[in-house]
Image (cartoon, rainbow, N blue to C red; front, side, top):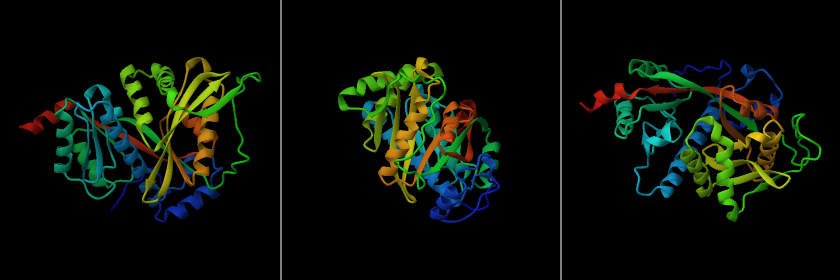
Amino acid sequence: MGQTTPFDPAFKTGSIEEARQEINERQDLRPLSATITSLALVQCIEETDRRNLSRQVDACHTLYPVEKISVHEVAGATVAVTPARFGQKLNVVRGLGMRGPVSGDDLRRIELLYSDVGLSTTIDLCPYVEQSLLQLLAARGYKVKLFMNAYIRSLDDIDIHNIVDAPSADRQEDMSVVISPVKHDEHEEFVRCSVDGFRDNGRSTELLGTLARVAIRRADTSLYFVKVNGEAAGTGAMALIDTDYGRVAYLYLDSTIPKYRGRGLHIALDRERLLDARKLGCHLAVVTVKMGNASGRNAERLGFRVAYTKAYFQKELSFTEELKE
């Protein structure tokens, strides 16, 4: 990747096997700054994120076949373009700068793809990119909108017969909690429960329902229910994504219905998915969470650590309209 500007001073070169070994050795370290991040590990996480986005958009196209939905590759990055009503969740650029230099012409191509559908350009940027790309983004009017933490966990240490669940003190002894796969005839219930769990995050009901239905249509994804005394209380998904660095378990779409929050259900769901991933031969698990989100704290309780922090850069549409001249 050339000269990089990593946020984490522990950045180093090395193989994915070496990175896994170091994660295993330091899995119990609390300080996030102590996380070991290698070039191979960074590439693995970014490739996982790119492939996940591409598969989301491909599945979305099967739901809305007559709408303009497409995935493009520009300068090695994955550029997802879907209806403007889906916002940056399904209209985002990932992997930019991870496979070589990025030119001003590359950025113009990306910006035109979004301005053509009335959207500003949003770039999910890894911190381990060349300094020249950061300078280019600044020169073209991009600003940081939010930060996301990329969490990683080695699964090599997991004893599938002895992993400790850690529910909160609010979980009652008479509460029967079951984590189960979603059956085919439960798909609509899965969608309803997922939407109910995310409804208070400000996103539209259509987008929330689309994200759940996209997960249902993905062949690489397993769906999960969290049921309390027989009632659906939460949902989650896990995609098994083959990368150049091996198969990675990508945890996503976690939601809990409000009345069941704070009872350790999310941790129970994470625990089950990690066990399944290990049984299926995965050695690494990845989850990406907005900074400060409770999902990140839950992930840390089960051994995940922040590999690095990513910034979402956004350029307002008014800056891109001039590109059509």
